[in-house]
Amino acid sequence: MTLSLLSGPASELIGGRIAERLGCAVVACAVVRFPDGELHVELGDTVRGQDLFIVQATSPIAEAHLIELLLIADACRRAGAEHLTAVMPYFGYARQDRRARGREPVAARLVADLIQVSGIQRIVAVDVHTPSIEGFVSVPFEHLSAVRLLIEAVRPWWHADATIVAPDLGATRLAERYGEALHLPIAIVHKTRVSGEEVRVSRITGDIRGRSPIIVDDMISTGGTIEAAYHALLDAGCRPELIVAATHGLFAGNASDRLRALRLRQVIVSDSVQLPETPALPLGVVTLEDLLSDAIRRLHEQRSLAGLIEHG
Image (cartoon, rainbow, N blue to C red; front, top):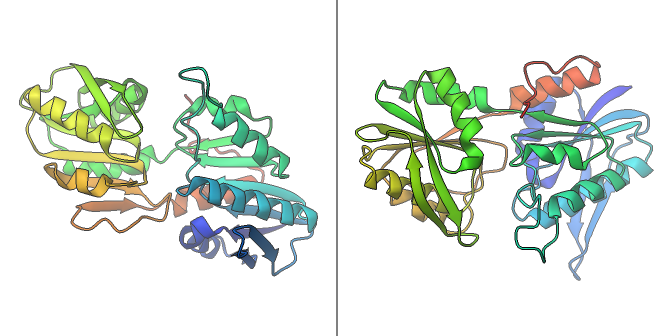
């Protein structure tokens, strides 16, 4: 089978760089919106018999980019693609993996079902918020990690009096990975989410007094978790300078304003989503093009993804 790649509207920049690195064909695809709001997809090239990788993050606006992915996949399936893989640098709706208060959908499961029904036969995702989402899908789910890349980006900011901070219990394992690689202690912020933008901190586990915090997480959305964690760390006696590292920089709502109000030395994210304008933020961006290109090449050649896959 011939290897080919299609970049969805949400991932045109990184998709183009991946295709260039792989030296493979880029399938032309027009995505337009009708006056009534419906999306329409049309392929400009043949995909018959091809091993096709669709690069599309389901980043904000998540439902629009999700529908784009589903329509592109269906068009490719109907046009005779031999094998379809969705490469999703950011997997939206992964946070909604359970019913927290009872009268809610399990959106992560529904999204997984829709992706399968569209004809996609394999999913490649990066640092999914809830790794257990793999159990929601019956097609192969390759969970890659950008943490090694982020650790190397954090390393120049390393010093012996720093502490790696998990801003909530869910980021504890992630903080441990950073701590082990950088030989630094970790602290854990215990939080309760009040709303989509507001969180409340109850306590901090670990010694932070007189130490410089490095907050690590899988994503920066509204910045509310980082803001609450930082103020709690200040109250616990940490140094005021802050470094933040996260795979996905969504910067939703007034996140940039929130973060600018903190004593930030550096914010490090990947290019898993096409970053919005973040004026006056000390932003460092790690590219995923090598990671994703390597994964695509290995999958096409039916080789192991050892060293790229995240477990747990």
